[in-house]
Each structure stands twice: as C-alpha cells, then as structure tokens.
Image (cartoon, rainbow, N blue to C red):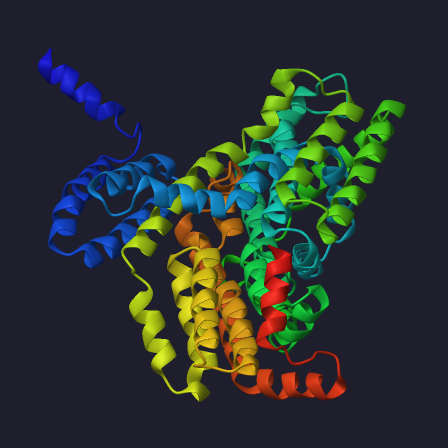
Length: 529
C-alpha cells in the first residue's frame, strides 16, 4: 500500500510530464536553497535559467506549475520578498488588466475577425503577398494597440481557420444536409495528407504576425509598455517619440518586410508552406455557406462588432483609459448588444487569458529576484563606465541580450532609470540621454524577438491553446525567429551606430524636435504621473 501510494504521488506530480522532467524540477528545488546559501548571485542566475527551461518545455507541461514551484521556493528561502513581488504586480497592473479584459474582449469580436480574415485568406492566393500582408497589418495595429491585443486577434483567427478544417475533416460537412458517404475516404485522405502542411502554413503566418507586432510595437509611445515608461522619463509626446525612433524603426521595418518575403520565397527556417488547395476549397466553401445562410441577426452582430472595433481603435489610440479598462468596455458593449447574457457564456471568454495571467504573475516573482539579487547591476555599471562614444551600440546590445532572457519591460525600465540617474548626476547631458533612450527602447524591442520569453506577445502565443495544435514549440519558435533576430538586430545596430546621431541633428535643424532641458523633462514626467 505504501509503495502504491508513493507511486500515486509521483504519478500525480506534474501529471503526464516526462519522468526525467519531474526529476529535473525536484533536483532544482533541492539545489536552489543550498546554492543560495553558498552564493546568492549565482543562485539567482540559475533560477532565471531554470524558469526559461520551464518555458522551453511548455508543450510537455504548462510553465505555471513548475515555474510556480520555483518561484514559491525563491520567496520562501529569501531570494525575494512578498512585498517586492506585490510591488512588481502593482507596477505592472496595466499589463495584467490587459490580459484579463482585453483578450477576453477580443473573444466577443471573433465573428467579425474570422469573417474579415477569411475573405483575406481566400482572395490572396500568393503566400508571399499574404505573409507580408499579415506581417505589415500586425505592425500597423501594434503601433496603436498593444502587441498582446494584436496577437490575441491573430490567434483567434488562426483557431477559427483550424476549427473550420477540423469540422470538415471530421466528416461534418456543412454544404449539404445529406451526408455523402462516398466522401468519407476523401476526407480521411485529406486529413492525413494536408494536416501537416496546413499546420505549417498557419505556423508561418503566426510567426510573421508575431514579428510584425515587434516591428510596429517599437515605433510609437503606446506600442509596448516599456515605450510608455521610456517616453515618460524622456518627456516625449506621441509624435516626438515616433520621430526620434524613426532613424532606427523605419529601416528595420523595411528590412523586416523584405525578410518576410525572402523567407517565403526560399522556404528557409520552416517558412514557405502554402495553403493546401483542398483546405482552401474547404474555407472557400465555408465562406460561401456562411454568406448564404447569414440572417439579419448575424448581420446585426457584425455591424455591432464593427462599431465596437472602431471604438477600440479610437480609445486605444487616444489613450482614453488603461488598455485593460478599454477591454472591459468592449466586453460589456459586445456582450450586451449581441445577446450574450449568461454567466457561463461570458466565462468562456476568460479561459484563454487567465492561465497566462497567472503565469505572468509568476514571472514577476522572477523579476523581483532579479531586482533583489542585483543580477543585472554589474552589466549596467560596466556599460556606463565605457567611453561615451561607445554608449549607443553597447546599450543597444546589452538591452537586447538581457531582453532575450528576461522581460523587456523590466530591462527597459531598469536601464532608463539608471540613465536618468546619470543625467541627474551630471554624468551625461540631455542630448546624449535622448539618444540613449532611443538605444534602450530599440534594444529591448528588436533583438528580444530571439526567444518567446523576450516579449510577452511571443510568450502568450507559445502558451496559447493554438501552439500545440500547430506544433509550435519553444525551440521551433526560436528557430523560426532566428533570421528575423539576425536581420532586425544587425539593421538596428547599424542604424543606432551610423544613422541615429546625424538624423537627430537634422531633425533639430528642421525644427521637427527641440532640445529638452532637465526641468522640461521633470515637468513632463510629473504631468504623466
């Protein structure tokens, strides 16, 4: 009985995860307190590596459980404190509200999104043109909306496409009331032959769109959470932020779109798979079926969702409220005017986002450990001590590398605060601070596409219900993002090193932007708070 009970405990621990993975997590839990007692700095970095490992194994075991166990132990042994964790959660409350409400709000607009993207998919037959369109659309949307919101939209669309295929491949035909049994063998063959290609097709579109969120998110004040923090510290308004970033963001955007087309043309790094003709026929058939069977009630829902989409864009572009609160308004408006009033029906909207919200909260525990154990401090101090003419490219690279292994919001916040302190202490002047702010912002946004944990939108995609359907693992995301990482990273570095300073000086001469005094920056920061 004792042996059986012990085996039962072992079987229940982390469920169906591989046995070696369970043993690895247990070993980490045993080693961490010992190493923390011997060397807290090394133990802190080991914890970061362990948490990244749990993200890499997301398809074997959702990272919330193993990562959460590591985080709980870190608090218990004193690597950080509950107060510091609470501080990080409060500091990132807008991100948490966004996940809870905005992603759920998108759920209530899925009919409109699926309708529009289905039209796009069946009308653009060129995979290259379709991929560039997805990438560019994600970039434009991410410049005004949060990247997480945009990726949630794209995920909803991809899940819709997959559901259409699965419905037909399972034998549930929607064009005829009487099922034709002679079609069964064809459907079975279609499922066997085309499923992998269809997955590869959707995988490539999702990765192009995810990269697009990074290309657009770096451009404006509202594109990413750290952009707001950096812009507030520098005293830049929306237009000035976009102008100051443009010497880097514009060439990066052009090269990113060119890379998208080249990858589809060459079929490198897992790209280039086209939509199987049989699947295109299914989606086209579905589109025609939906159009022919739409009632006035269905049209009314699409019209309402379209009006709410306009409200969403305007409210986010003008920053009328916190992003999450705007998402809450979308939930209320969309559910009220489309007749979704039952509690269980509303609850389905939150199923996708809440596990990731919990995971991100655990991630903030790791961020709290990074702060309390001063893991990034040696790197920051070293960069600041280097000669000023090397600051721009060093800050860009340092932010990029750290953002690959940590949260880019945290990295950007830490670096801009340190640079602002250097400005206040007279170590650097205002103009140098402004250009360093550009280097920090672009560094946290561009090279960070290398890993899913580098950007919240990528991590959300990895841990979504879509990822296992498309066989989109951590390693595959890293591999597919590699060409973009190289191109975006190198083009960004060249622009920071050779274009930023002369273009910024030209902007001063043209009067497009003006030199900031320390008092003006302080006043802008105060008004932002």
